[in-house]
View 1 (cartoon, rainbow, N blue to C red):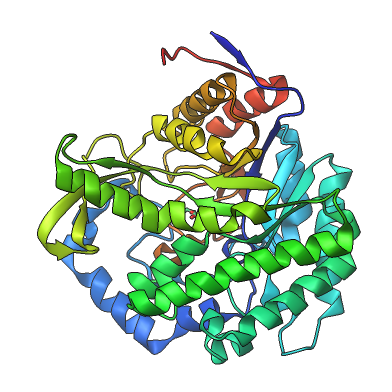
View 2: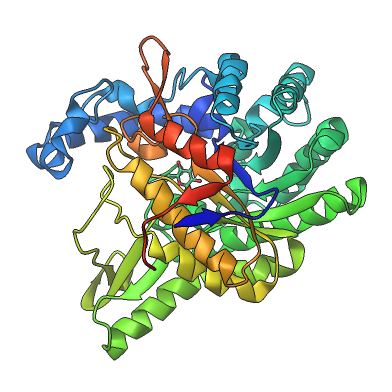
Length: 435
Ligand code: BGC
């Protein structure tokens, strides 16, 4: 079967500053080196169960989950210096768009002191993309904070909203004419969940109450940024959200309490924040990775009475269930907002590159079905162009279309990248699926 995508459909890949650039100085770099974090990791990686939990092949290539350096972002992919080379690769793979983020801590390393050299750097990044016929999709904040902002309590402090808008204003004034697609904030719920509910990202807090306040601040900064960008740049630019949506299903299909738990989790993670931002977005940015199967449990676990029980079926190196059909259901649900949708992230950690081609094709197959049924989907960004620093997990999860040798910084295009490139080039997908 030949599935053709609409004309002008966008195909590309995504990255974020802290995960690929290297040489950053922000709340994450401080946390990565903190005594608390290092002691914690040392005791964790010594334990036998730790190794048993992860697939054996992850221990073959440096840095492995057992190396402490794995958890320090350091030079990352040195993309800050090699962006032109990386965009040459993206071009050779027929990408016509690229999503990346601007690092606030580079632009404003000290309160109110904007660094012209760094603004110029991002101008060159944008120019390099345009010279290669690649449309930039720009995220203004992808999870890392300048040190002076984390010092005042990060997003918990309402002042941060003001400061962020001043930073956004600076970017709009300096680079605004060169950017059409904007995403102020990346995945507010995932950030809040990891930093303030399960406490695995800095500042490692576990408090629903604080998480809820921060989420409100993030949604409000999204709305204010939307207004600011349009006020200054007019109606031609497109400002969108970038939400992470899981596909939630009940563990026991007809069990009332599982259905209820599924509904609650879906509401907390997805529905609530997408409703909040719905009147302040020209497009919806959807980041989709996997399905969560939800069970009601007495006594509680991570979400007290809600447990996520993923059947150990086809999974990525990170244990995430591969469930392409989920993206179709999420897309059908988002159709009700009547906004264009871009898939701003979708990808798999697959160090051996055995599952990636099928992963991409199957997801695109389901995306195509949603398009056929009338959902306005305009683009797809694979996560990620390069292997990169996967936050608290470090470098071992290999999401890239391009493999990075972290010792030599050599780039090696994976076979799946060429398969994806064929789709990007021809704008259609050969599919054997029966949906
Ligand atoms: C984030 C990325 C991250 C990816 C894979 C997304 O939620 O935006 O920064 O690398 O998931 O975990």
